[in-house]
Length: 608
Image (cartoon, rainbow, N blue to C red):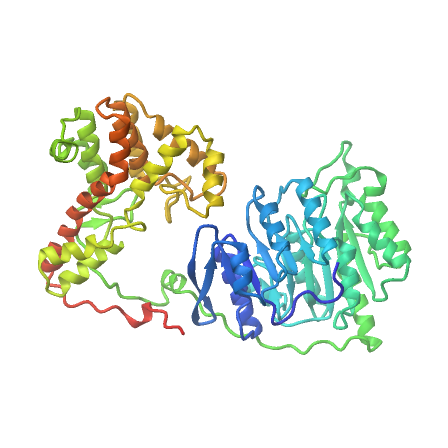
């Protein structure tokens, strides 16, 4: 365990597995503290590259996004803290990768439920290589006025209430992240506040212990006293007892071990944390409190008396001249986000595009006010024509009706997607129908509508090879490739895409076999265990069901099916369908006599 300070006003971090809110909270804290540079140097999101826009005070900044840990560390050699928001399934592997990077000095693991055997390996590696591991199951830590990890200390209002925007004189360490917030508030009321606070996490084997951090605080000149909040279960507190007994700590320690109420229960009690379970008398809160008291720690008679003990110790140090209380400063005002300001009625913002032909804001998209499902129920379209012109044969009615359904579902999805936006801008420039349509069609590719072919190709290959969903998804992850047809910016497990449901319902009713769709659903079940928005989207639904259409109809041999997928027939379906909507947007703008469009300056990030 490294001695002394692990964070500073210049500390920068790499954030693994993009989460907008905790990153923005870190940047807001930076602004509150008057930092000149953001504390988040880069974001690591597997399969992603580019930039993520966030706010640093009033200024919008672009934070680099990397797909690999090694690439991020190479690009940001001064970032020495790794904040890991991966799920418990992948937290160990990504944390080990980070610990192995020479530039990374501190790793914080937020996930709980990390296998204990994996945690032990991480702890051993970190200690051998003189690195600091915080967690698992931690909210992180904070150096007041300098740097904080993720959601530590909660909202900006709470941070201001706890005076964490400037350093105090108290070092604090706890097992519990939730109780840390409570103690930050308590300490701010009766002292000049926190200098550094750490939540080590509630798992049975924390990466760093209470005594590790108390010994660090003992070597930090700005820390004049230490507050420790332990809990029943385990023996961590006894290492602190030994350190006090051996005279390694010469600053006052005010400590309380929670869980004294456990004796009121007849059976063994398991509290909220994995490690908060007494394994015998020595692991009880009473035994630990008594042991700490016997070696000189200030231990109150109850948690209710904890605040008084902290206050009295602080006031004594002030009287002795060992603490000169920090002068209070007024922190800057954090700007309010536009969305919340609009919602609260403080501002009004003009729209930039008028659309009367579609609306994608409700439960399902509507065309000219008619719900998508109503249009589908008519059951007639151009499926038979496509069957003849594209496949050069007459497909069964259920196949052509499926094609028609795909066209109706994909015809339009509002004025804001890239293809429709291009068409609207071109039409407003006075260009003809063909020019306006083509300007929209030219955006169709890998990121806009191009995932249908790829979804069909990858699902078919994985299903035909007999790969399990785990083998398929993790294999794609190792290659740095996102699974096409999985994931949505808006839809989630609890807010399903109506289009996907309609397609699946139709296939279950009419298709002789839905082998590939069922495989796609199995993949979705696995990806949903990773994140709530990794649902099967409309591209994935069409891609997998078209495989079932081709294979189940009995009218195509294997070579023909492979050729259809390879040539790009399915993206052709999307091009045809979306042309209907793009033509509609052209007519809509000309009918409304909309003027030349110019993009607003405030909607552009000008950066060097």
